[in-house]
Image (cartoon, rainbow, N blue to C red):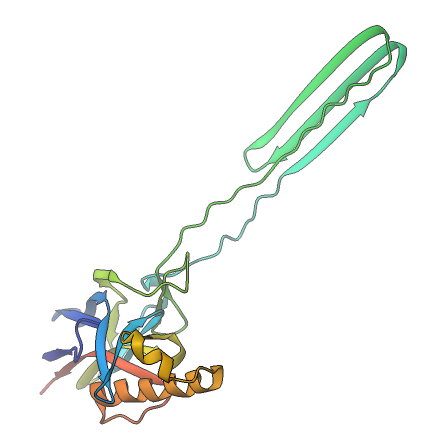
Length: 258
């Protein structure tokens, strides 16, 4: 059994994986620590850019293993039942020498039923009384920075503000999934990759004085972002062909039986 973690730029993306293997059950559990930050990159010898990530993906590719899809980390399961609040308001109005007003309110919600009633009488006043009841349904939802997607893939974001860059530790020894060896497999392997799409990479010029020499247009900025992403890709892992995304860190595991 052997494994290796590779982080060409650990300031930007640091992926550390510890593989826990049970020799009796042949179960494998990868525990992942992920820390993200920023880094400086010099381009064309004069221009320095601050690189950060707005979104990151973690993908697992395995051979000789099967996983339990119900035990993945970061699963967001929608409730099968949704509560609804209903308000019924009834009121009688009377104006003139005599006043008689009554109001009945019934509120049905997920906590049960509640209601209120009012009755008011008066004389020699032209007035009216109406009792109105309103009800609001408030549902609190947990926010996940790391969310499980289909298959063996996870998304890392700042959900309250997706324009924010990722900074800090998002996983700390987390069990992403449980893997069991397929019976009869003599060779088992796994690769865990932290990668981002070109549009999710934040690129900011630090030499502000150079901005006045650059013509600004959306088309040119988009082309420049693509060139910078290719530049980052070649710096980190030039052996893989660039396909619109950059692999920042990866971890590999291999186990072979005689």
